[in-house]
Length: 392
Image (cartoon, rainbow, N blue to C red; front, side):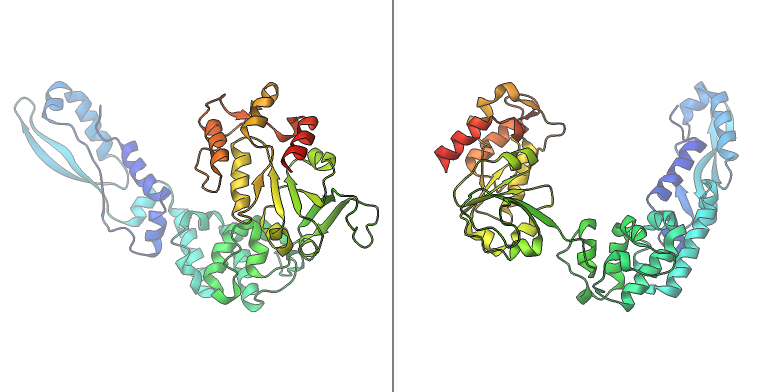
């Protein structure tokens, strides 16, 4: 039976709620009223073949609370004159909300709207875009507004989030709500106090002028004749904050980057070279080091789709960077160490070179083995030494 049931009518209204349309309608004219619902009714053949079922359906639809029914009469050749539902309507927004049990939630959203209109009218533009999210945040909304008010009074404050001092709000609250706060602050703050290049929750502090925990870069001197840093005499494994790393003036020509700590620690000596431990902090901190752009960069990652995706990202900052031990020869020479990549990437990588693209395509299209992966730490140490001698 394909006739519209009361549950179907309710599902239509629920979809309007799930899209946020009913909440938007609570504070605007987002939905025209009365609201007509889609109704599929029995036809003449149904009256002949399933008359009792039709009568039960008519009774169920007619008894649906909050729904107004338009009727029409049918003159059926067998059953005579019959009165059937022709259209279903919800006359008011309150009827629609009551029909799906959301009246109280809508009242709460209206209260949020009034609170925002009084405290931060600029944010009224945000509420209709994210009505369900706003409703979910209702118990935290006052604290979110307090953050907005504080930053309006202290633009680009130059303090750590831990130093944020507003009653009921601590740094953990801000960190947990960086996504929504970014959207709210982008609306509420003047553009000149927002750093547009700082994108994503990880750059919330930088975007709005807070101090951020310094990123630390770890590297090893691979040439024993390289001069050591003051206070680090005799040490080859050094960690600096990104600003200090950018200020270095090391007399090096080559820089190797590896994501694996064991490879980083065991990397062989190489003339006028260092190795950097990637450690997942991204490439932007490295890109701030002007001296690094004058070096020959070699990236050593896993031979899998994500390894090549990381290489592609690196070239967005260092177009001259070369891959290292991510070639077909290395892959085929270590067949006994092949593993499986859990969730391979499939998208195009425009910054790869032709020989890298060929290997990447073999991986993403499963030409050698489904989900093929060769982790960098499985490459033989002898192979590493031999490739260093022959290639560099």
